Image 1: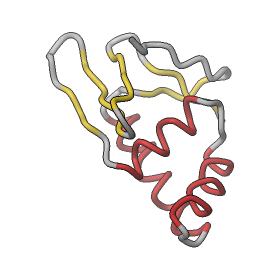
Image 2: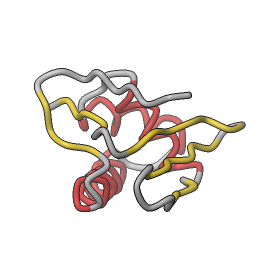
Image 3: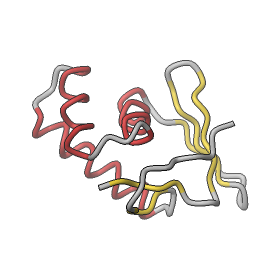
Length: 95
């Protein structure tokens, strides 16, 4: 499944970390290394399973642990209305 960045948010990679900004409120989130890696994988069009495979290799964790981390991350992003499930993975909003 692909995910789409909602219009309320923009993001930027600064060094190895991702910062996500909500326009309306000015709230922002600086993602840690793991969350930044997941975010960038999703941006590149990876499914949750593909991102889990990449995460398990990059951070030397089990695929099951990686899948759990990704599901928790995606749920949090969807709950905050940063991402919505979509049919195409066009994640704009970078600056």
